Image (tube, rainbow, N blue to C red):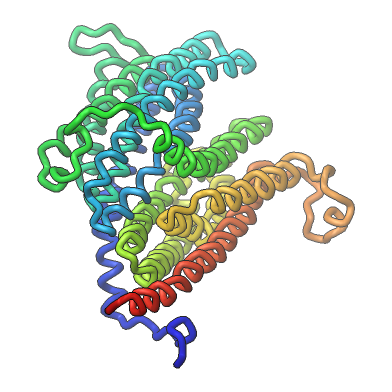
Length: 487
């Protein structure tokens, strides 16, 4: 008799595909709105600091750059809760979730305090920059003040992952939108000095960030405590001390994700620093292209979280076929969106750049970078959604190595050669007709990003194919064993 694994897989009909797309979208769109609200906080703060003074703007921008690098890394480490909760939900092991979330909250407290200390020490990097005294003061103050928000941020990301993996994504959206409005109000009051407060300038943005991160945590706790959807798994119904084996397990799952996020975030941060030597026009063009593509990236990023949840639910239920189906539908949806976004960016790149500035030189440079950004839309969408799908299988280390290879072995070294020092390339590479003889500046780094993201996207697609097949191969064996054990 032909084994199940040897039978050809029939192409899925349109109805299940449409149903899966709908399920993905119902999970993803509130996440996307919430992420955009979080970005909106930084946008509002930078805008208000810019109206305070140029020194306040520069100080807040530097502070946010350091802050983002730390919180995105911390966010990745806290993501260990997502696949574990999703598997318990799929297996209908709801009684296991409260213990898991309580231990993840302990992990968040410890790592939040550690990250706060790291952020405090990171202010030393500003001493090595040629900054005006006022700018230095704001940058240092911003980082020192916001470091006290990191324990709350880590706890919030635990609850975020718990809620998303329960299939409840609207609470994060609603809380994020409310906190965005609060952030705008607090920044306006504290930066400019309204309602009897003395004007704080850029430091007002720091205090606003600190208060709003804690408000995010408080708002999500309030919502979840009152919602019936969390009643059976509410983690704070009882006290529990740290359980070190569980904490080690959570760290083992989360640290590779944190390293992955750090590799990508630090690569973009280093590009900004390396491009700075070529003047303000190059820096401005890089920031415009990065800002716009970061907004577009929220769609595949949200799909990645939704795919992680859907795959985890299927695997928890013992259905690897459904997990594979959901993973590839998610990848297809992300690639479809990427085709649309790539076409739009390529067609309207000059108009997009013009929304940010009237400087014709910056517009021309940013339009050039946006064309390269259009090229990597497909690989960028592929890498973020496949990463989510693979994490749904509770595999985090292999994707980490693919991402580190893409950003730290391919993108940064190649970007430095193309953008800054073509003479460092080996002779065989410089002999090629297309290889530049002059530094390509920001464009060189973005071309290297295209190649690096192609490596990441291609490598993760192959890894997802391997992981899904490996889990699928075990399914017939388990089915036969169950049949043999049956009376």
